[in-house]
Image (cartoon, rainbow, N blue to C red; front, top):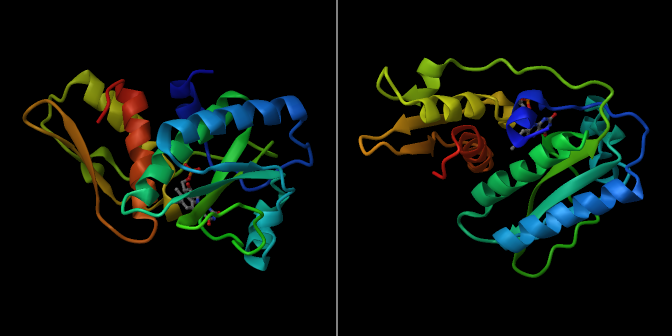
Length: 217
Ligand SMILES: Cc1cc2nc3c(=O)[nH]c(=O)nc-3n(C[C@H](O)[C@H](O)[C@H](O)COP(=O)(O)O)c2cc1C
C-alpha cells in the first residue's frame, strides 16, 4: 500500500481487537518513529501500553481504551510545535495504515497516566491510538470543495489531487477549519481559520496535500 492509497483507506478507528502488536511490527514502528524524530527534531514515542493513556472514563465510553498502543506526540515547546506535530504525526499515521494497523488522533487523553517521557522544555501535545481495528472505520462527512478551496475554475491537476487528499485528512471534531488557496504564481497555501487543535489539524492537512499533489508547500 502506498501513502496515497493509505490516505483513501484511513479512517479513525475507536474500537480495537485484543490482538497485541508483536515484536517485529513494534520494531518497524520504532524505526519509523526514530526516522521521523531525526527529520523533525520532535520526541515522538511509541508506547505499547495496553491503552494505559486512554483509560479515563470518557475514553472508556468511546472505546479508545481498547487500543493496545499509542504514539505520544511530544516535542520541544515552540510557536510551531502543534503544526509540526500534526504534519509529522500524520506521516506516522499513514505509515501505520500501510502496515495494516488502524489509528485515531486523540486530543482528550490522560496525560497523567501516560508513560511518555517529557523532558524539560518539552510539551506533550496529543496522542494517537494504535492497534488492529474491529473495523476499518468509515468515511467522514466532508465540507464541499467550494467551502474549503479558493481557486480559479480551471485549477491544475496537481492542485486538484492535493485538494482531494486534504479533504480526506482527519481534523479534530471533523471541523475542517482551513482554506486551500491557489496563488497567482502557481503555488498553493493552506491557512487555518483558528480554534482548538486547528494548528495540529493544519499540519495534518498540509501533509495530505503534499502527498496528494506530489509537491512541497
Ligand atoms: C487533532 C485531533 C484531535 C482528535 N481528538 C479526538 C478525540 O479526542 N476523541 C476522538 O474520538 N476522536 C478524536 N479525533 C478524531 C476526529 O474526530 C476524526 O479525525 C474526524 O471526525 C474525521 O474522521 P476520520 O478521521 O475518520 O476521517 C481527533 C482528530 C484530530 C485531528
